[in-house]
Image 1 (tube, rainbow, N blue to C red):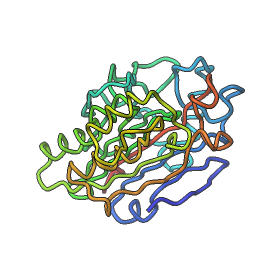
Image 2: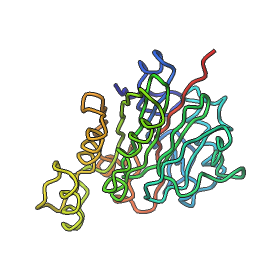
Image 3: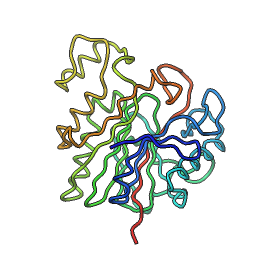
Length: 267
């Protein structure tokens, strides 16, 4: 279950019981507690939105510190998110790609889902309306972070990630955490797009100009074997809460909050 926590001015929605039980840290950040100036104020974590890279790196370190993950800062792994469907497994060889906005190796290219079984390798992806999804397997231990905008959701990126991990890890039972994203209340789109979703997902009504991405993601997860009882939806609309989260639809030029996951090393 997700709980809203705050440390050193950084607010994160996290599952403290999961971490205590199996050493897996997960979290969705809010936008306050950082050092970025408007229009990225203040905890912008993305390097591609024309923010000062040094400030982005400071913000990332603050998040890692608040989560007790600062020893793994150099192995932080991010991706060049392109609203695609590619899933990349993070090994020791590509751990640390995109750790820094300023210098170092670049992010893993053209990828919208990352997963790993490597301890001490934090995964982080960035959002400002798209659906952030964290997937967790407790035994064997594995984590994934998925970026699902409408293109990815329509293509089934979340369910495909679940199935890909299950094919690699025999016996993996996944739990899904779905973070803040634009809600049906604020996501007005072309009715033709809604119709495409309704052709794929029975939970999406055809005659509408509003799109419920959460419903599509929930159904996609269910089909992949992650039942509704193993899904934790934060249920917060980013466009309605720009004091706490970034929203591209509501704000235009803005920053990005994150989804984060880490397998803590075991002694």
